[in-house]
Image 1 (cartoon, rainbow, N blue to C red):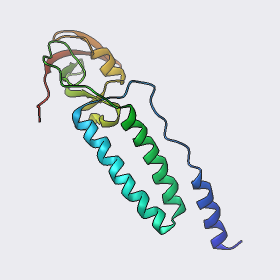
Image 2 (image 1 turned 30 degrees about the vertical axis):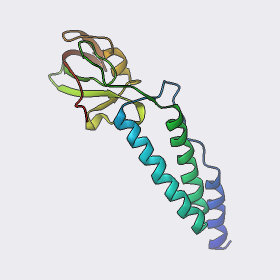
Image 3 (image 1 turned 135 degrees about the horizontal axis):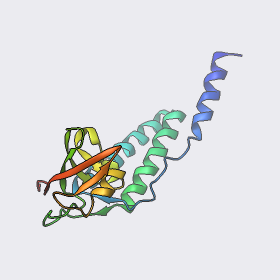
Length: 159
């Protein structure tokens, strides 16, 4: 079996990449999340042109799949304006919690595609966000294996 034959088999296998799963949750986004989606669609469109021009079947399949995902996410995006007040935890609010193990954390509740807990953003569909939504400062919620008290709720900075 020649090496070229093996590469061709691999490339053909990648032409039929599985579609990226799309969440069943509403596609709520912040203004920043909408900008991120638009940027990703633009980037992938340019990448698709390059892949098509180069005839790279693996890149065409990968980029095509990602572009279909992000185009679908853009089509279903529901822009949620920042809340006028954050007396209760709402989409877009910044929430501070104190966990029963002594840790404090702060998260902004955002759309699924813009969420990155390590960067302080939490998807509205995540288990923690779902228990926080509608609560107020002083409420205690289950958080993972323990509990957390809501110690602050604030508005995001407006651009």
